[in-house]
Length: 136
Ligand SMILES: [Zn+2]
Ligand SMILES: [Zn+2]
Image (cartoon, rainbow, N blue to C red; front, side, top):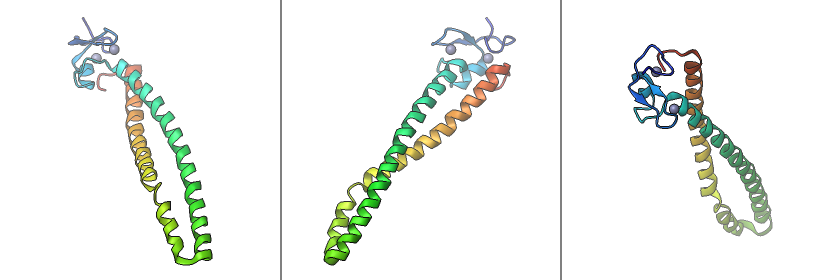
């Protein structure tokens, strides 16, 4: 049996998802985990859709956080003008959302990095699968 992507190469494994035969090179792409490049590409595309949806909702949170921070800053300034430095107590309360804001920012950063990787792999796989080239 020959590889379904590289018809001139002998198959060394079959994909556990789609059952198609694949060569050494194709099998190595997913570190011999039994998934062919075509199925891996489909997985990446699903992951990309998921990441984009999560990024969208997290960006909405970022907007909400910015509004919240602005309101707290205005409120704190008004309180300081009104009752003096005791208003700094208000600022301590204002710090409560900070861990959530940091967490959201870190998640967004992780999503951005993962998306870059996934999109790179999709481009590479789309090219390789489209042209049937030997090296992925
Ligand atoms: Zn497959
Ligand atoms: Zn192959």
